Image (cartoon, rainbow, N blue to C red; front, side):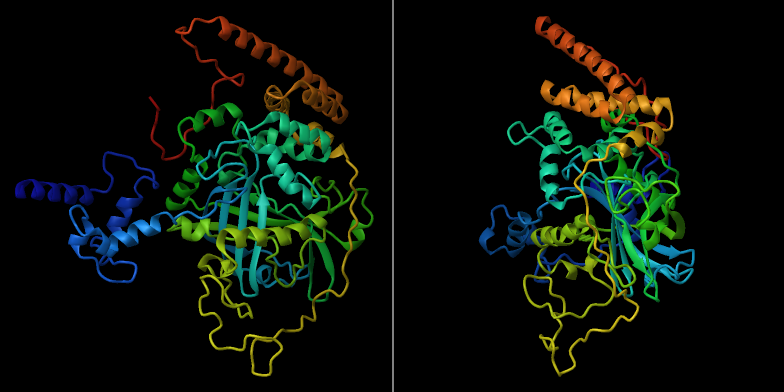
Length: 553
């Protein structure tokens, strides 16, 4: 026995002494070995939750007094509480730490400290996510991909919550839970339901523009690093003189935008549901730090009163020629998180987290989001979620006290009411803050022009247009005929060519599906089922850098 133990010990030392020779590991695969190399000795004594050191005989509970084994109780009675409620939307995700660096002087547009001072660096945490996927879902689903950026500024946390599409599905905040129900799982079948999705779209046609973006190549970017991100709203910003501008922020990837076709995504999904997460982690660990340029498209108060569209409508783009673009700086991610639950799952990103110089968007959707995000974070993380380490601002002194942990220092013995005459925290006067407020009155009218523009101008070539049409057809085939007819009519109103091509393709796909079902009904039970290749042809997706060839047998 001693000889065997000595042999194994020498084998471990020999493996450690050779740095990954004769085998190629991705950073995600060698994380534990990297930890051991960084800590050649145990990092300390194992303790119970109370700090009491664990005696080795307590690590075995067979034939023992289990009731008096505190280690067993610590381990088992906390295990069931490891999970907190997952996010209703954007549950699956990952993230990293980094910094934002100012590269251009924008002081004449905003006095926000985070965006002023060329060369200034502000720490950030960024969470990337999938809109419709649960925690264990796939990264390769077609739909919204989120990018939430938290800037730890000297004037509080600034959160910019973004999507990979520059437009959003709706304007009225009351629609949010209803839309989510229509595009998520059917309450009886627990399957994604194309009939429900198209039923809602045809009854709320303003949604079609955003679905056009996700049915196109923009719906499945080639990983988080290779997609742009847009905070959607038109934000009001102001300078030190109280002069206002209205901007749409854009994060433009420096890696170059890249997308996956449906066939490529299906091929990767068969091997790796965590493709986006793995790609981001590997890139950062290997020193290929992903970066984005932050810019803002800008209008003056005079501009917004003289355009022929609603610039605060999140379901449409600003028209070319109505705005100018200003560069702000670079967002760089250079550090993987050490504990996903601590740093990402507990992350609370709220569009209401703004800073002086950025009063925020004046539209009604944003007003609703200011309330709703706080409610979901109170539910998931507790009312003290801003005292969780990853959410804490650099400076905070409040009259908010007590409640469920974490409470941190809980403001110690300072006065717990305001006003007071005993030197508790006091407010300040922001003389640069604009005195006027813009009141936006929005319309419920449906404008199909943005969707028509997308089909004719955003889709840059015929190949992209054909992939877009095929994705629409694939979503229509499972839907019931009355809803399909409404969908085809809507597409025809948007563009006659689009409506015609989708109808022809839908009828052909439906006939093929019916023929396959008929063949299956007459096929002997032991008849082999052949694999039918995708209509998009074989994948030409290049392998991920550093990845090993993998096949599921």
